[in-house]
Image (cartoon, rainbow, N blue to C red; front, side, top):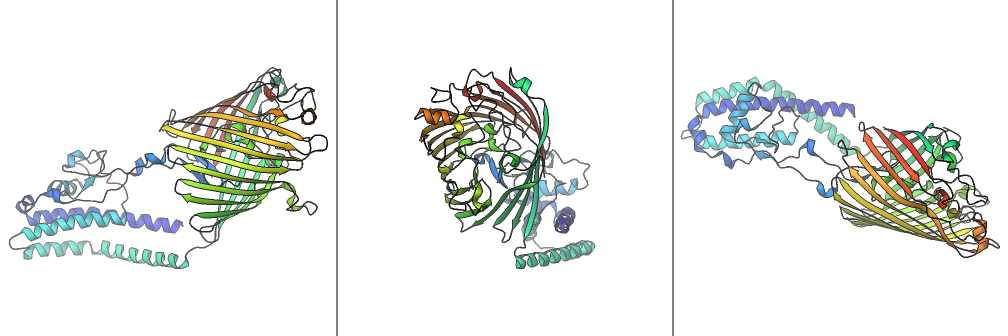
Length: 578
């Protein structure tokens, strides 16, 4: 790959040098042809170079998938455009061209006599930028066409002296022309070989290392926690066998711990702490890894069936969302610092692992995701693939540029994990009342009002039925959030966000036995109060690979019980990607 890049740069430099010398040739030709013939023709008939987009003005797609992580960018797709180049009538209008430049005289002649040179809309020529073969061909062809027109306008054509001058110039640049011809022939041969070979199996390694420095403040939570510094690391091996498929092997290591909210109510077995102050879900908690041990966190194979349908086989992965998320807030490296701020927890029950996913791109603006997942114990012959818990979901996605919408319906069954999502109140997990079957609905939407501001939100509802002996009954759980996102804050590429929401909350149960089994006090049938999650973060992009994100979130009425004092979590996350 490096040799190919070097070859391309070398050829571009040679063509740029040759084109510069061509300017000199054409200037000499202009003297040979005479000023009268030049003035007899209107230079405006020459259209000049084909319009090119300004590399400095390029924009990015707002939300894109890289591997399995969406990235938060800054410009909506509807804002993408190509700036046309403008014909230059005077060299003085090019603000980056000076009389001291070595090709100033040649450029002046081509611009003011023949009009076959164009500049960019910002008034620059960018003479030091490397040119492509297409640019070279277009510029040379335009000027040569102009010369041919001038020759045809002469009464007696070109004399012997003119032909002698042209022959002398051809001999002078013979070495450059021969060198360029040889390089082009070599490049064409290598290109043909690559095309014949089509594709070779390639594995790409990418990584994400995140460090967290944080502490907790609050009447009860402050003394129960100390300042911590931890890491969360991902390594991904992405292999393609055909150029269209992908085998994803994900490795993970972390020593990150969840802060203690130190809740005292309700006064049942659930007293102590909740998952509301969680920063992330780690392999140590889900898969049983030790602190900083490297373990498998993803094993997934994706391939397209045709140009509209793709399928994903997941031997070890819980994420079967194939269509790009409608927001970049769930980015691990540039989104909010809390787990709740990054995702919709009710859509991600912790017990799912093995499964299959299918994406159907019905239209450019509309797609559907279908998934079927199984419980953790599918590798255990005592449980097997068909006796474990499961989840089945369908997810429509609408992307109209500024407006984006996503919905979801999920039916799930878990023998032991309820609808635990590692968030919200302890009772909202619906754990302790036997096997649980649930139907979950979700709807979320975002609208980009301008290049600097976006607003969106989501709401989710889960109707869970416990099937335990003596605890059979129904439970209802809700969550919601409203999100304000600001782009290019303080510096282009930086983002800031404010999130106001409610983590999963148990809003009702059908009987006292069920309520007591999942951790509520006698006589209580739902979480006692409504606690809110209020979060603010600022994402400072140091470089393309380093991001620093300070953030703070405030939990009112932890465990959805206002008898528990508020909790404030402050975090500085630093992300390194490669």
